[in-house]
Image 1: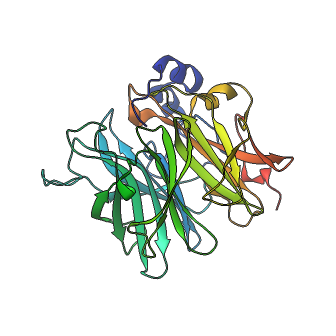
Image 2 (image 1 turned 90 degrees about the vertical axis):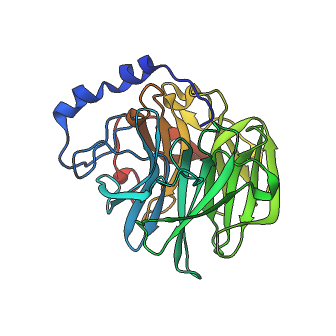
Length: 331
């Protein structure tokens, strides 16, 4: 999320104001409405931006940036059994009150992702960290851990993987349990992948350039032995065209195969930006494309775009729909 610009006019024209929609809060969600205000179990607006999901013991957990109007306020976590309705679990990782801490206020925690390590029995959170008072200069990967999925998470350290900048990022755990960070480096001109150590706390030297094309906001998934990667261009807060790459190995080579978005405003990713792709448990080849519709005038009011991924000629397609349910996938 490096210095993006998005006009607030487009946000409110498409989704309406918080005040207007708050008059009709749904008590129980039965469908997804991309771009609408989304409330938790306490009738508070869900505050989990740039986030990712973890499925653990029958429950989904949604980790995301807790945002004020502009401030980075830590990492929130929500839980759900059905993906429609979310319970606020609390602040998974709080900003430190120690002014000398790397995660003190006036720094940034962005794009948090959590994975579980069965060997250490720890939940491991990675995120893009910017140090207090330094803007986007640090470009580091931050790591925190917890024995409980909802936290609280204890901050461990930050670093640049093998000396490379690490800004927008995601985590991916492959079928063999190996974990990887995919991250934007070299002022976002490079997209790289690095294999994590067995405890998921550090980077190994298996670190490869995927491509140099000024891309960020990586979201990855696997289907039928092929890996698919959706990224965003780097245009400040402004939305732009998504790009899809495909590979037979996480380390590449990755081949560009165009823009998977279809429908109104597809050329600007429906006025959003990718953050994660979530498999739906119990359904075959069912994946949800998750994106943020950023509102730089009030980041807390940035909305969420959740859309089903379909496949045409074995290529992913994200088709805009105003409302949809998990019945999109019959199995």
